[in-house]
Length: 318
Image (cartoon, rainbow, N blue to C red; front, side, top):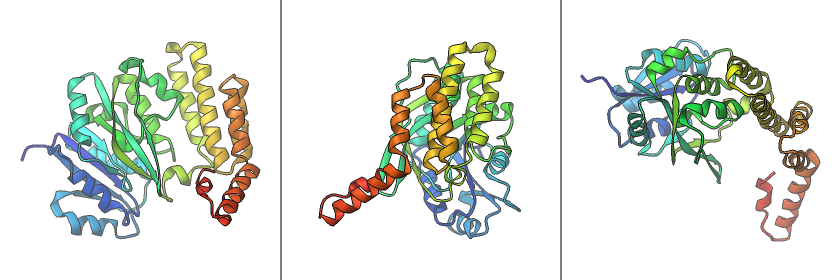
């Protein structure tokens, strides 16, 4: 049989409730020259049974004997992948049907590109937010500078060249969170990054996601990782770029910590960014409006509006 050109890699851990949605969306792609590899990371539920029962030989299932973490599962999948391209899909997310077709085309048009990313729709209940629709003026070979400063690419939005992935080394298993960002930076340093400015992925907000699990400790993983990359590329960065990169990261990570309830560490990082002159008014306003008293006021206001028969939709904003 002809080897697949694309390997769809789905790491899964206790994903019985969502794995069918993810695999179905992969199998519904208009682009057809691909394989689907599910790496069951020592699940304690029926994830593996569902994949075997529903899909048979349409999906290649790799079962790890114990839970080793998402990065280790992805490394196993990359090692086993037969495709020249590897497309990442989380077990709780889904693709739109043209996703692979559009990104395979983008990579074919740019042989120097090591990865292609797309836009995505973040779905949290009835709330939706679109992201990743970029109009960039920076050259594809310089995208690594932007990736140092901010999280621009969600993992299920990436199709990367397998040779490039293997050349830069495995996902860092010491990073409980942020290992995907680390990988995209490493890839972007070695080649170009292209964006398909379309919503091609739906990312679902789930309770057990790594982002939520490590929401109050993300600074301990993400910031050292970013600083390490900044030091490695220091000879290519102006002083003002370093200040801007670190300030933007401090503000973003600080906000995440603050909203997760780590008010002290979060506010210190946001204030650190403000002292560097980074969006002072915006960050100050965030600290005020996201504070526990203000959140309580919003909830009470929404509750009062409901009691009076008014629209209480503001409750979801806090």
